[in-house]
Image 1 (cartoon, rainbow, N blue to C red):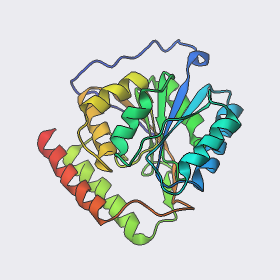
Image 2: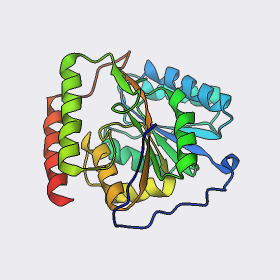
Image 3: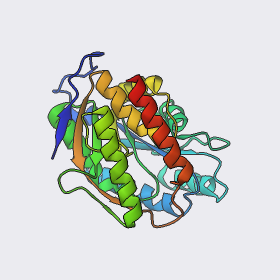
Image 4: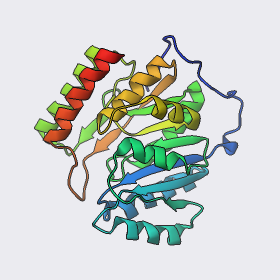
Length: 260
């Protein structure tokens, strides 16, 4: 599995000693949702199964942005089923963006590590134990899932979307030289304090936000490990990627190129 270390100048990385026992660690999963009523019970069940089988201490924080399809009501039921110590519903009244969802969720996180991922089943929780192993091996600040190295890949996309994704990642690599192979992915593990610092630094919204997080990590001299993942297109619901998001991505990319 590939790994990279961002070694450029910047803030020193707040890394605890490698000898720290993993039994002391707790992992907070941030799950932003919008119209994920069908997917939410499945992703939560898979997360609980993965954590339980690996004896990992965890909590799942659901940040629903006023979904009109009943996602919040489903989350309330899941909170009752699994317990409020494991499932924490922290809703917002309306759709306010991914970056602010993470800011909102991290306020309620009690773990010393934070995992971000999509709630639409495109990110399988089976990779999380691998993320944790990779982080321990290299004492990384960030571990990012990558579709573009090793045996990583994308399944269920048509040719047009594959070209858009590959093209966006290629252009980003050329312009920003981020030191990571998959900038637009959103399946990552962070040290909590690192994520907090990066969120403070980031100004982008939408899909550019994930890209800026890695670019800022490079600037602050945080280390990044990578784990190949299989990305699977959503089973239920509609993709939130549209023409407006593509235009916003290109504008954000140019802004980052001019300012970093």
